[in-house]
Image (cartoon, rainbow, N blue to C red; front, top):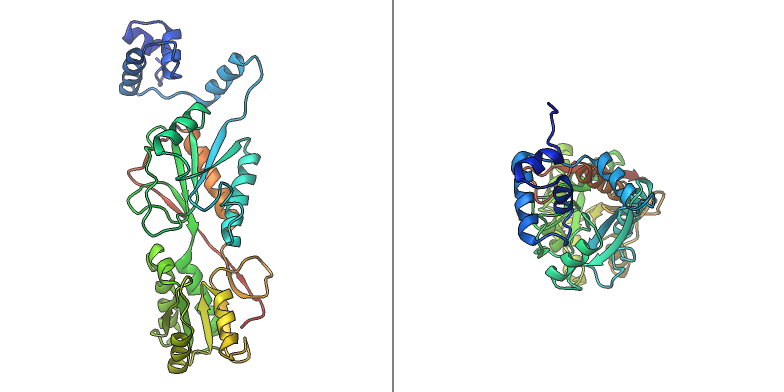
Length: 338
């Protein structure tokens, strides 16, 4: 006896032909909905799993050799239909580029959809109509977010931070390790009073892992751990920042807002790095002039597609009981600002 369930086994149990079982499991509308549901439930109870190679071959036969490339969807909630690819963040753009190139390498076509541009039920209908079974979610731009549509029929992978209540395989930068390495590099360069300037919303969205990495690095090097300033990217407060600088007198600043911080430092007559060093937790690209951690966004995006391809092949759909997070280490960029 074979160690797997065949279509003929399901057909015998259901009292129908093998062709009927095949049509039902493909969701053919030539069969009544009740028949499709009955056979699908029976197949699930019997432990049926389609074989990816057989499925591909049968698709090739049905199309007379014109096998169409499977498509995965890249989903985001940024402004504009092309908001992920054109995002102002170089790291997010690199994640997108990595996902696109790896999808192409693995033989997938890609389509992009903006969450919120259509009703959730309508988006699900579009994905199903186009035969899309694999989803890659971009990092969510807000602390509280809800994708708002069922994932039962889809294989899905989350890049970066997603909705807190959603259990999906996730690929993200190792923010804790990045902040820890940044403080260690500051110590190796001779700095002794590092300060952390971080956007509070970003800090909350990451569940404070940058702050944790900074504080543990400072504790390891026996540096002050209290020089932390919350700077809102949307509502920067220069006067309060000036007071913080005078109070704590940091000799180097670690931040996820290096462009804004460098601009404000110049407005306050601080020269970088002569008066204070500057280390970014999100350097735009290798060999950039700003010192700090490049998050390796391209590898994050390509790894997400690899995980999705595996889930599709194994027919792993919906949320996972035990979702695995894959953390990608960043790369230290020496730069010129510390």
